[in-house]
Amino acid sequence: MGGKLALPTIAVRFEGYRSALDESAIGYDDELTALDASTRESAAAALDRFAGLALPPTAVFSSNALSTIAMIPSLGEHPLGLIAFGDFPLADMVSPSISVIEQDPIELGRLAATRILDGIESPGYAFYPRTILNVRLIERMSCQQFGTALIPG
Image (cartoon, rainbow, N blue to C red; front, side, top):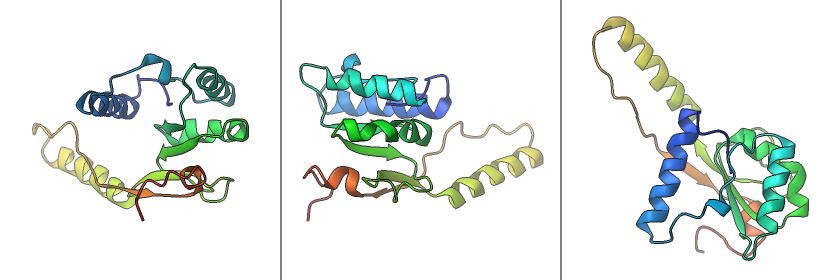
């Protein structure tokens, strides 16, 4: 689940999702995708649609914090594992607490500032269009409560 593909970060994450499915020979299934699920109503509708599938998913990946927050009111009605891209305030306080893939906001800010300053100093220089930063999995109850811990042990 996520926002609109017009947002570059959402599009790149979606591209990664599709690539991972292709590499694992699972294959992409349009029924298991909900884009533009960034409001309470659209997130609830997507979760309802997933629940109505012949083989409903047991977990959801949310591609951004906005979509994750939109899902929170409906999570009680849908017993699903959940991992969200991007930690946010209170993600550890809702019930169940939400497992997240955390970005380092300090590193992200440092990189952005460096790019801006480099662009000012060298206006004609072509910078890399994309940089991939390390992320960290923070496993919380949104996955553990379903008996499917992400990290063995």
